[in-house]
Image 1 (cartoon, rainbow, N blue to C red):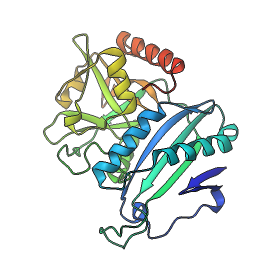
Image 2: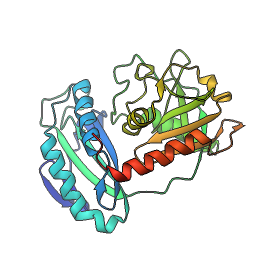
Image 3: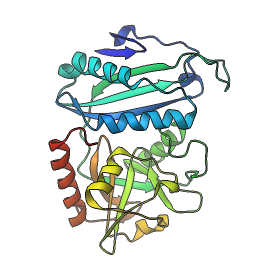
Image 4: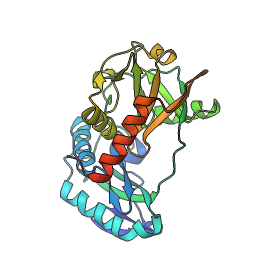
Length: 276
């Protein structure tokens, strides 16, 4: 297997970054994860746009997106056959080497691109709400930052309760997002998802579901999960995944609206692997 570091392709076994890299020491970086199907990454233009937006929000230097595309193409060419039909492509961009503290050094950023085999998600998900809120007013709200400690803790909490995803409310008790997914609900026949001002990530799949199906962005209390007719998750690797359990509540899946959206997403994503 190969990966890309900064300006070249290297064997994964020989890959090296500085022990002082700010992405490692303080989580000063951003990333994107894209699904790869038969060697073709899905929605790469949208992922790169969000990468640049995350860098701007984090105060990191603007990435050379042409170089990132070159790196992605090189990794795909080197690894796609070994990975198989479904892959998971990760682009990581950090502040580069820095002091052992929070100040940046002004060093050149680090660019990493790697790929692994993708996993098949279950047909539906069990989720739990967690006791920790997303801070919709925080400095990193809505940024796909490498600082993922909150998500790690929340997902472990979910696994301890035999669930595969954890759902956050925000500080005012409104529905926000999962650790690695956006959430949609069907209420009175309407498809609704939390707005970006709730603190959720502007997910690539989330955006496509809204554009392709006319979903409404609206604040809802997290308690809507106790009564919503349908609930589903959306992310770059799982696409559309119905939710069959929220905490102790069971839901019949797939609901008719979820099934329609999943079918529409599958058809359109096959027809256009890089929807602009």
